[in-house]
Each structure stands twice: as structure tokens, then as C-alpha cells.
Amino acid sequence: MKTRNGMRIISVLMTLLLVSAMAMPAMACMPSAQPTQDGDGSTSIGSPCSQGINIGDDSDVKVETTELSGMERNKAIAQALSDKSVLELRKELIKAGYKPSMKETSAVEGTTTNDDGTITTTIVGMPFSGKNENDTAVITFVSNELGNVAIASVVSNGMIMILNHDPISGDVQIQSLECDICLWAVSGICNFLANKACSSGCATLCLTVPNPLWVAVCFTVCYVTCRYIVAQNACNWGAGEVCEGVGLC
Image 1 (tube, rainbow, N blue to C red):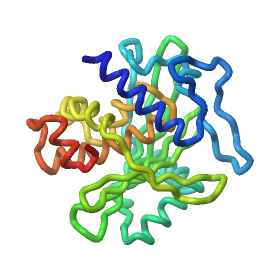
Image 2 (image 1 turned 30 degrees about the vertical axis):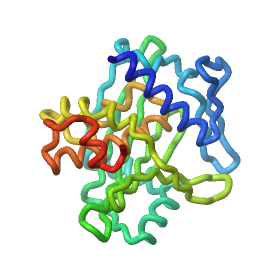
Image 3 (image 1 turned 135 degrees about the horizontal axis):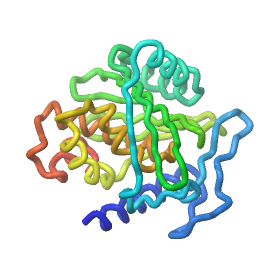
């Protein structure tokens, strides 16, 4: 089952990387694939293969996370709010009637360690409330030595969408989201809820692969799903029922 889930996640990740114009060969790694700095300071992220991590087998990966508070939290949030993509996504959400909640904004620092070394990642999750009770959104900002990525997930009318800012065109793009990540995440969420909040638990779950794009997409899906599970007390539901309720499947 673990191998099958790993292959499904590889498939979803490859799709997301291709959608974001990031070169990733079908089932091979490009040794030369490395993050590159664009002219406006944004970062294009290479394939996770370039990080020496096998998405399908995380048994040799150690992840540790810490929920930031005080000055460290404020510093992480300030870094996120200085990112051009975060500002554009935030502007779009506010224009659509969503209200940010700085009080609920979380900041998590995590380390991912495998045979090739350690990568330290900062994740900032910025929740928004919509006009209707069930409409929510979250902007996820991910930053590490491989680059910075900002993505928003929007729940509206029982459906969830991903928003991302294209630094080249300056446009905010809307993309539909496949349900595979949600189905994969449900059991992990219910395993960590007894000991961790949604933010730190989802960070731990997603940081097994520290590619910023993967972490951003995984975290947004996990976070929205986790909040739904908590609200509905849904850990005794099947994964398909949960993800259908969230609007992902």
C-alpha cells in the first residue's frame, strides 16, 4: 500500500511541477537540475530528484518541526509578507471578499535530514475567512535554501482550488487540484492530531520532501483537510468521504 501511495504522490507531484513550467523527466532524475534565480528575484525550483530524495520511500528521512512564537514567529511572518507572490495572492483574496486572520497565522520551522544532509525550511500559513461560514482560504509561504514558493488554497461552494502567482506575467492563476494528496494525507492527519496542531502536524507530514513547491501544495491541502477533520470530528470516516466533504474528490 505504501508503494502504491508513493507512486500516486509522484504522479501528482510531477503534474504540479509540469503545470508550473518546471522540467521533470517521466521517471528519471536530471543531475543538473538545480534551483535558478529569475530576473525579478523569484526562484524556479528544480525537480525533487535534484535533492537526492525518493518520494516513494521516506523511511530514511528524519523530520523535526517547531512551531515558532514571539519574535521568531513575527520575523517569519514579516518575511512572508515581503514576498511579491504572497502580496499578490493576498490582494486577490481580499478583493474576492476573504478576510485575513493574523491571530491564526502560524509559522513552523522544520528540518529534513537524509543521507545527503539537512535542509531547514520555514512554513508560514495565513488563514482567511470567507463571506460564508464554509468558505475559507489559506496562503502558504515556504522558504528554504532551494527557493521560495507561495500558493493559496481557496474553499468556495464546496470546491477547493489552488491559486498561484506567475512572477513573469504578473497574473494570479487558478488551477484545479487533484484529490490524491488529500487521500494520502488523511491517515497521517488523524495519526498526529492527538499530539500536534494542524500547522505543525502538516509540516511534519509534508517536509519528508523539502522541495518548496511540493511542501507548499502539500501543506495547503493538508491544512484545509485537517481543519475540516477537526470541525467534523471525521477521523472515523473513510479517506474518500473526508476528501469528498472537503471538496477535493
